[in-house]
Length: 192
Image 1 (spheres, rainbow, N blue to C red):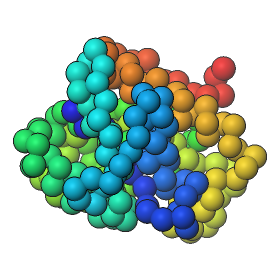
Image 2: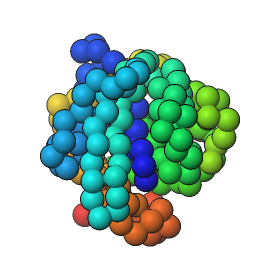
Image 3: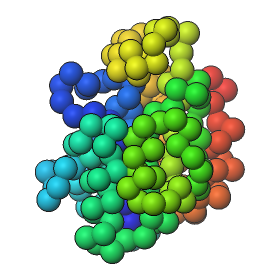
């Protein structure tokens, strides 16, 4: 993977909300790899890492979620990187909290950030890692739910899920998407 992008909304208002789990995961990935995210030449924060898998850029778009496609597609064009060399990490309300899903391609499943990325890149052939956010503590309105703060009672579980997502990213980079799919798509935090 040449680019790993974590989706979310910018600003303090959206910090620690369910919709920012993708961005939170990339922030934690940067910390795990000992690099700092800095303002890039565009609407994103960026950091460069090097490992045995090669050079990888970590990105958090600073556009709002529904406009995630522009920073990513601009970066891809500038660096002449194909979409099959990127991984997008984001929240998914259709999955229960405690599950992650890795896919090589497909529809957005109604996620507006992924919708915009597919629209701006012109393809749905984009690898993604989705983090489940569905809980028993739901708001009736989906937009209210995804933009609500993560309850402190769930902080420990959310941290464990993010760490699992980071482990999955490591497997993706070292062993490939198929290995990560086999290992993590049946995984559930509650199984431990």
